[in-house]
Amino acid sequence: MALKFTYDNRNNQFSPDEGTKAGIKTSFHDKRVGSDFNYTEYQAYINHYQPINGQWTVAVRADVKSIDGEAPFYAKPFIDLRGIPAMRYQGDEMGLAEVQVNYALDSRWTLLGFTGAGQVKDNSSQNTDEKIHQTYGGGFRYLVARQLGFKAGIDVAKGPDEWTTYIQFGSAW
Image 1: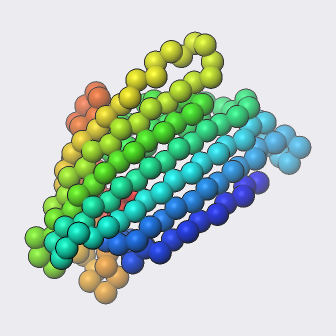
Image 2: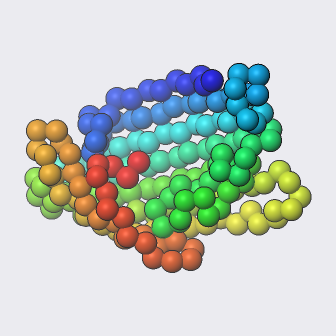
């Protein structure tokens, strides 16, 4: 069972250039209602897109997640940034921030650069690694469907351990 509040005034669901999407969510997992585990998840996030002029757009993202109780390993919050494999860095609490700058070459092609950082904390005494993990990269988008404002492209990102390539359909967030 979950309680969720979302605000969304982005100009496009697929590939926004302007607006904000923000939300808070609390999910309850309890054996009394059919779950195998007893724990609660908390999340708050914001994605904001701000046009600077006709060619430049800056996008910022912040996300925090927390878990309370006896959650399975696959439900623990993890750093979800381009350049870091999913579930590589997990903990009971997670926070991240990312900035992306877009430059429109023309009406169809866009270049972009991004950087981000995230950190996880574990409430158990076994995990003492609370290092901030940073990523950076770049890519491009091509306007595939003009009437929908739908863009697709490729991002190349460098995380703490390796380079990674992503095929993106729409926004990365």
